[in-house]
Length: 95
Image (cartoon, rainbow, N blue to C red):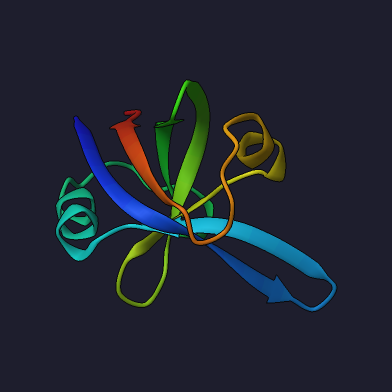
């Protein structure tokens, strides 16, 4: 199963650490939550994620009402993406 969507890149500070992420839109989050695929640690779902020309194996993590995809700073640099930029994301669920 694959889903695609566009969303802005966000930055959140957690103590001394900063993370970059994309929040899944409600429709895509609801679809992925309903799949019944095995969940990993913290309720994560394993996916292949693609942004621009970069594809990597990772997990999406549930929040109280959606999922988030963490995005490495290196990927942002390679794809020339800045915080606030709208990006096209493709997720393929690994089962």
